[in-house]
Length: 586
Image (cartoon, rainbow, N blue to C red; front, side, top):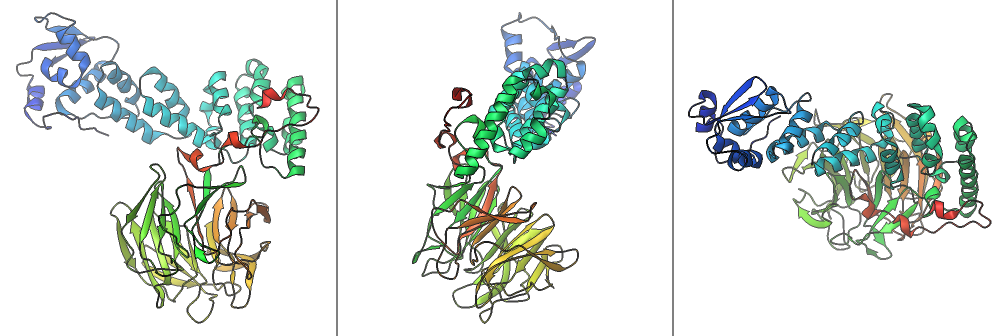
């Protein structure tokens, strides 16, 4: 990896010629037995350190300068960079090179090394890189490494580096709301692995660590099987008191249907992803409202940053920290326009329009591109399809589907696109198709068990899930899943509420459906299908009843807390006759 320094010369110029020939050099740097013939002015040009060394810390006639604390190889890299503006960074030299560049105040090399280490971040090395940044001034790299630990903690918790954390650093990590775990069990099990590295010494701190586990977010069954059976817990009265109190809180939350409290013991951590419900019909008009669902707090938050215009039957997609809204209908006009909301700057911007106006459009993301398929242009149903490339801000047409489809739904799975159901202008469709970008061809796949217009489909864990819709007579609650390997559909448990034209997405291993039309009215009801247990359960209702909405899931955002329920706004837990000082749990 190389970095071009911002100097007034170009590689291969007179600077490099002087470097190669050692012509008219005016100083020698020694590192051990190695000598480097250099030109003071050139090293001053790229490093304030050398400027001070030559101009303030020595006499004008001094020619030899001894540099201690680094190897001849590192000095060679630094001198080469001064003359050429580039440096070779590898896994073997990056840390030593970064420390040396930091000491010599060579910002360009520091930035190159930080970029290299940022690109190398993974669950197996992020703690080591974060701890390394304490030895040099690299605040951006330090923050990125720390955020990587938090955002990938489920994988980091299984790494060997976890055991190298100090007690204080480990506690600081466990305290954070933005420690991303799908289940609080992960936190408790990480503690056990950390303690196992030095059981005698670290086991004495178990009560301090257990106090940072949000035990009431687990279950009584988990506590009985995994916590109470631990001998360190059994031998600690403080731990046993915490476990008993957690059981009381769990029973209280179950009785009162509460998902979380402000108190630490039942304070939801931030989710790994946020479900957005965008636009749709509410009452007699389209809406521009966006609501965000916080799966851990089980609540919807209305965003201040609504769409730039009301849209129903539009498509939505999340890509590169941006939410895209495509096509749709405002009651008068069918749109081909596309609006993009940057979740970091919180600003809307219109990007390149689609080739076709598309209401009732099907939208998904595949390989860094957004696909818009089928729909209705205000006159006819469409079989055309196109994709958007953010880097070029361009839409490109692909092969058309085999059938006209509006009110269908599409998804990406295993590098292919799947579209199911819809309406062709005469009837609701039972058919489905698969598109391969490699061949640019659509092929028909096995029919679903019934006709479904206003359907929701989503690809996950090797299957395509088809949910709800309208069969021409009734709104449906039925669900089925397609297996691409066998080209067959299997029936799954039905939703609790029949619906069509709803939003659908997967968040943390659960398939969520939101809103829609139930055959009588629009609804704000939300439910989810647990893909592990195979059961449907109700979730908290949206604030707005609406159909013809679109959903997408955003993840990986450093500012994800801006789109969640504020943890300090959650209710404060108080149980009568508490045997534990509540101040310890707030």
